[in-house]
Image 1 (spheres, one colour):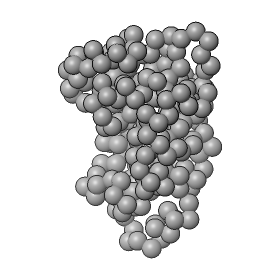
Image 2 (cartoon, rainbow, N blue to C red; image 1 turned 45 degrees about the vertical axis):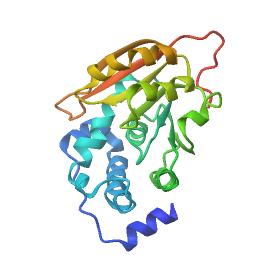
Image 3 (tube, rainbow, N blue to C red; image 1 turned 30 degrees about the horizontal axis):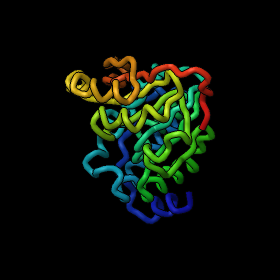
Image 4 (cartoon, rainbow, N blue to C red; image 1 turned 180 degrees about the horizontal axis):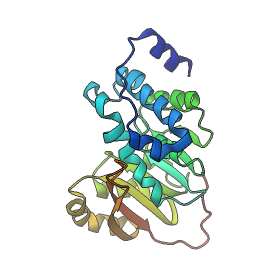
Length: 231
C-alpha cells in the first residue's frame, strides 16, 4: 500500500473522470470505493502501464461499469477466481459490487500483482486476495465456483486454463465482444476436450446503467465428491 500511496502523492494529479449517474445506481453506498478504485486506475495504474493513458476518460463506461454486469450471474458466497486480472478487471469491481462473494485475483506479472495487492489493501476489501501465478500452475491447487476473465486469451485456450480450476458444475464467465458467438463456435471442440458440458453467450447488465456486456458462459462437467469453494 505504501508504494501505491507514494506513487499517487508524488505524481501530478490525474484527470480522474467523475462517476456517471449510473455508477451510483450500480454501487449504492459502496460508490466511494468504486470512485477510489477509478482514481487508482487513472493514477498509479496508468503510470505503471497497466492502463493506457487514452483509457482514462472512459474508465467508468468501458472498464468498471462494463464489468459489473457479470455480478448478476454470481450466487451469494461464490468463490470467484479472476484469471489474468491485470489491473483488477473484472475482479475488483465485482468485489466492490458484491461483498457477499470471495474474489481471488490471479496475475502472473510482478508489477501487476504488486499493484493489485496495494490496491486491495488501500481499498480495504476483506473479500479479496491476490495470488501471483499463471492459471495453469494452479490446477489441482485451487477449486472455485467461478472463473472470470476479460481480454486474457482466445476462448479455447482460456477454457483449458480455467476449467481445471473449477469445482464440478462450476462456470467460466468470459467477457467477450461482438464476435462472441463466432469465437464460441470455433472453440467448441476445445471446450469439449477441456471438460465443458454446456456453453452459451449471455447478455448481462443494462444499457441504462451502462453495464451491458456479452459473456460467454462455459460450464464444467459435474464431479461427484468435489468440495465447493476450496481455495
